[in-house]
Image 1 (cartoon, one colour):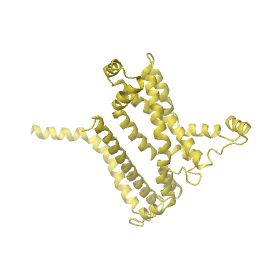
Image 2: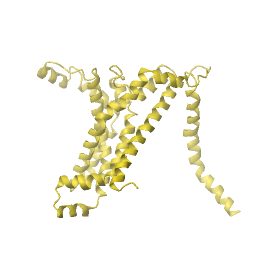
Image 3: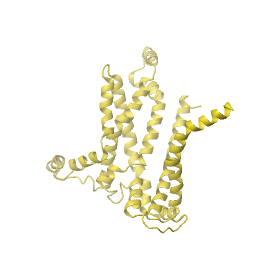
Image 4: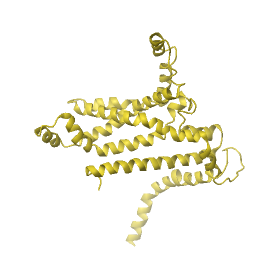
Length: 294
């Protein structure tokens, strides 16, 4: 009898989580399956089952193909630059004797900034009649079309994302740096190792868990970019900055094709899963050589 009471108590204690999971995960998941197999427009009372037609159309769509390529365009700039800057910030803060927490918070503040507000500021700064525009006009005789040229638009948005997230990733690196035993550096110093040698032989290998986390977060971020291209370029020019979330938003709320948008969201989730798996396997192979992974 007492065992039965314990089981009932266990279910009662777990019921809030189970209810939360049912309302906010399982029911929406089932609803998305229904949507992706239909052509419902969120308004009409009539439904029409289309099977896999939404997926076939998405795979042939140039907009979806460009959305698939855009994370890799941003990744080429954001991942190496973001890791370098965030690691540099972490090393700088970790080297301070005082006020480490204050400086860490200061570098973290851009992460809290509104993406819409920052995008509007950047658009004003890059305007033709802005101080930056006048500088280029007076110095070089021309003003770059920052948001009208595919490469420049990708560069601008990438730099904005690096600025926003570097402080956040730096906190992860900082935690990793502070977990490295000081005895390792003291032993390396006794052996005559330079600071550069100590960084490559001690700091970087010991930062594997932090680097693993940061890289996974960065790769996932590439597939969720929305605010900056939405405000600045609307996915242009010529779909150069067109992302998965922009396409999902456009199809669901502009074209009113919720079923098609759900199919695209499913493809997006599949792409994220595959890319994160590839990165995770690659990082684990490196971690195995360092002794972090068995």
